Length: 192
Ligand code: 5GP
Image (cartoon, rainbow, N blue to C red; front, side, top):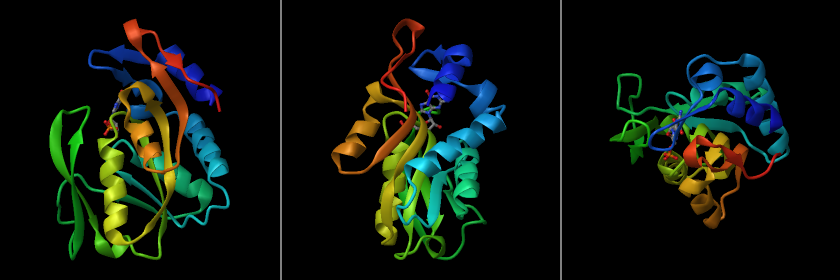
């Protein structure tokens, strides 16, 4: 998506450890016009797929998920990274590793909010090694719901998580697909 790629080139910063910082329009300050455009593009890509729920994981995926949910007129569910008093009753849980914090955590969702009749679109801001989205697909599988696919704002393809999901037969769409970030130079694979 050219709008997003241009923004990444203009404002993104490549930090040590292959972390792309996009705090000025996505991860801290949010450009709501860009967010709406990204949500509309995602809705176009997944139109007519019978999706009835958008799902992500806290915290940085929530804004994009909520925007997609609003455009598609669908409810949004976000998994918690810790068991909290907001998650009571029977839960589904899956172990995951945080790329940006380099810590392990349990991804938790109330079973009541994810049911076998759901057809789910998983979304997130970034797809890197795929730990977060793998845990989300596992929660969907455990619930008995079906998976329509994955949509992310930015996929760092060189980290392999997206292609590993594709190899499992899962549809993965990235609005910006980064092929490499060597020496701080961002190279995109193709433009949607
Ligand atoms: P993965 O689990 O695919 O390795 O990483 C995905 C998660 O880590 C995303 O939810 C995102 O919050 C975070 N993440 C991974 N890579 C980056 C990055 O380059 N920049 C930022 N800002 N977040 C990232």
